[in-house]
Image (cartoon, rainbow, N blue to C red; front, side, top):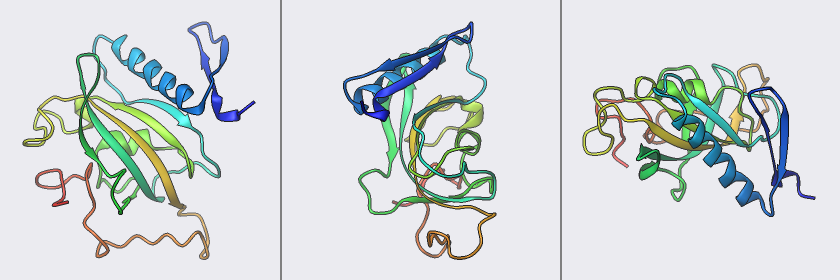
Amino acid sequence: VQPNNYSTFYDDQRQNWSIMFESEKTAVDFSKQVCIAKCNSFPVLESVLCQDLLLGEGQGVEGGDSLEVSYTGWLFQNNGLGQVFDSNVNKDKLLRLKLGSGKVIKGWEEGMLGMKKGGRRFLIIPPAWAYGTQGVAGRVPPDSTLVFEVEVRRVKLTKECSGSDGLSVSSRDSPAPSPVLSSDGFSSD
């Protein structure tokens, strides 16, 4: 029995359901579809929907913690995943961010709380928590709901002493890729 081949859910009567899948990928894909179905059940999505795909290990992150993450972002179109508008998965650089600093969209600040190193999470972010009525020219239409799959690769907790896992966050190292807020919302990468 593989531990990552299970998904556990609660129904509206708070009854626990555990489903075993043939592979971790199948379990993850099912979890994504459950999150999409949950989004489609709301007449209007007003807050961030989060679905853990892999829990990770260690302490959950809080505001002030520094992270390095890989991500893929899709537009939510036709009640499901639309086109990819941004990703750093096949790039050399991870996105570095300090949670709570206001440098990324509000939906990330909210949706990543509690994640652990090695954890993967699926986020569906309504327009008010993303780029709102402005969107991002040529990339994200106005009033777009966004979907992200994020994975926390490294964590430096604010409460840790020196000698952590060696993560340093420096603005001179590289321009941070989106979903960073800037004049156009995206770096030159």
